[in-house]
Each structure stands twice: as C-alpha cells, then as structure tokens.
Image (cartoon, rainbow, N blue to C red; front, side, top):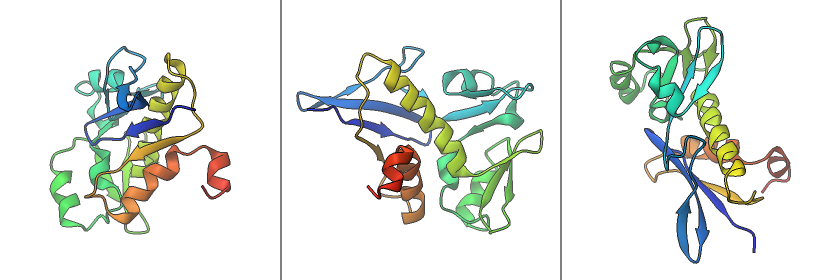
Length: 169
C-alpha cells in the first residue's frame, strides 16, 4: 500500500508526515528539523528563500520577508481582522483590484496569499520527496476548521499535482 503524505500548512510553522503502523511519522525537512517555519523571503538579488533560512534573515530584510500569510487567506482587505493584522507585520500589504489582498515586496512585485502559501507547500513537498520516505501519489493538506471555505480550498488545490487537478480529484 502506498504511503499517504499529509501536509499541515500552519500560520507559524508547517510540517509533513506520513502514516506508518497507524501512527503519523514526521518527515524531517532539508535542514533536519521536524517543523518548517511558514516564512518566505526574497533576497536583494531576487533569490527566494523558504522556511528556516527565510526566518533567519527576517530582521535584516523585513520588507521582503512574508510570514503569517494564512491570516490573509480568503479575506478582503477591508476585513477588520486584516486591518488588525496589518499593524503586526513589517511587509507592505495592499488592496488588490478585486478587493482582496496582495503583498508588495520592496522591488514592487506583488504576491497573493495563495501564491505565498504555494511556495511554502512547494518546499514541504520537495523536502518530503528527498527524504527517506518514498514519493507518494496521494497527499492531503490540513486546513483548520476556522478557515473560510475559500481559504481552506486554496491550499488543497495548490498541493495537488497538475495532473490530479485536471482530472477533478
């Protein structure tokens, strides 16, 4: 039976695990840790950093370091929760043309919360594939029950392979 890999995309930290003998087993990330910070950063040269390396440079590069992105998932810019969260993040958050949210980096590039989440999911997937756990065609993402329908659906869609998205599964 193929292993099923589960991804917990968290607001602060994320993890990847598989079931073995009825118990979840955490898959270590590339740095050897059990959890990966849910942080994405861009260097001055445009290199994308995800996880612990992104978190380490947050103090020296706050305008290009995005964290707590799940707080913005599926929300409108005018949402009171968004307005409260804006006071706690150093990066620039703007209203998208559709009323949603965009993160604006120092170089002017704009990213949506699902795009940033997809970058985190991509790292988690790559770490799982390169670990001792075998590649799995089946995977799931955990979204907390407090997620709105729109915010809960996006990470699951991003985590699927392009082939599975087109087949409707």
